[in-house]
Image (cartoon, rainbow, N blue to C red; front, side, top):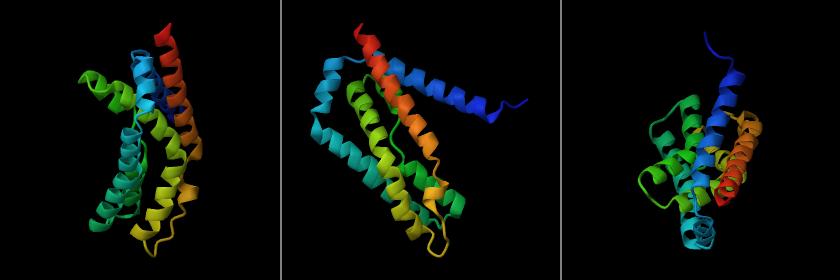
Length: 163
């Protein structure tokens, strides 16, 4: 028996929240504040995430002549922000968790503008002749919900880690 889609969605958001919360609670606040001042790393990460990756997604969709569903999926994935899974890998391999969590927070906020912008720019170039209204396709409710989940998990995790 399959679970109702709303249950799967809620469980997904809860898992995301607890993953980000756990990583954030183990953070040294001073290290995160230090990373916020590391503008070179932040700018490089944002350029890679919202300029290079979407461009590579566009080139791949065009080069492999992907159909609408596959091409849009690739463009959405390559235009989306980095996520909590990177935080887990950083924690697992003792990498710079403070930088990873900082980038997750910043890229999640920036994605509100950059995800639709990248899709509006690249969709017509990939699907010339096929009319796809990106703004209609995007689920802004899910995008905002993810933003709230990630940012609240980071804030609550950092708060609980300092207590």
